[in-house]
Length: 319
Image (cartoon, rainbow, N blue to C red; front, top):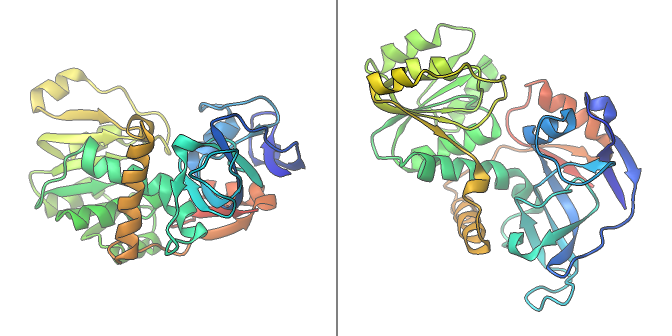
């Protein structure tokens, strides 16, 4: 099979699209022929060598995608041709992927392969952020960093479904327009005095900030109200400055870490959360922007585009 690989860490030039042996199935796995694969910043971090990575060189990144079963490996609940997806199975950037049966998500006919690859990691992340990391309450005001990105768009829509006001932060007027289209009530730009703009909108500060940038963590606390919360779940802008625990005590504010793998702890939990997303999409309660597609063989271009920060929404790879 063909796969997008890298044997050393570095910029996108280390990516190679090469022929490698097909996966050897373990007893608890089925074989999936990939139809669409999600690209995420975590794949960039893996390529650079600063994120957890399984296997040996040539490394294969990717954890998210959708396709059809081509070998059920004696698992009676699956048959050849079944449409399936997954959010947390390694080595996804390949034509064939061995997927643990506990990680397999049945894919409804109404959900395309491209949609599944576009929503699972980012959609499930937005889902746990709004329902677990922070117990969203109707009438709150939330602040979402990188609001026009994949997680930001889903988190905006889910937050609106739960009855809150959404303020977004992004880097350009074009991205701000995307965020407004997704339902954000106010959007401010990073190159403006966004903290002052937030206080003009909500003088006491926001109830919760979802911070995926990292380097903005201190600023996020500054615009959070007393007894408010900051959920830190990404470092797209670099490591944050240390947070002073005395500040947390003096203001009764809370810092919460966020990681999807803390919540996808069983087959039942994965399926329940994924089905909630699928139902919202089928019912028209969540709308997806058209993903940007690259051939799997064009992985370098896809990584470059993701790192350029020009994308508004999901990037997917098509074998």
